[in-house]
Length: 178
Image 1 (tube, helix red, strand yellow):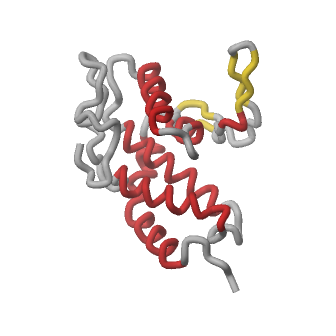
Image 2 (tube, rainbow, N blue to C red):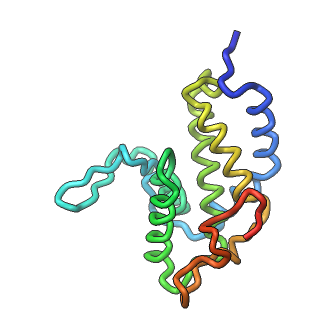
């Protein structure tokens, strides 16, 4: 008998929600700006020496949405302030005059993609304790980013005048309100 860490009802509910929302979000990943990405830019694939950063293990390199690498780099148990600082630095470097209105949506889709890839790439482990956090994280992505719609991404863009996010909450809320 299979042991479920989060329960088959949670996994089923999450997969149903994902199937309803992901087709449009996936199109955002492929129709947005494309660049060379590492594909698995997790902290364990980054070496630092003499204040220089060296990404290693390039087997998943591709031409794709840059948000995939940002999602990988900020995945896990990072403090929200650290994730926010990474996202802000990425956006400031990529869009000095203000965030792309579709950025938040692409980042949410990239996060969902990474969770799905990890869950689907390990047959027999999808319902185990080792992947329970991914199911919870995937549910949060679905709640926070409203992948089927543009959500509040346009209202949450960085204001180039004030340097603050509009709405002041630092991201999306589960209610979708800014």
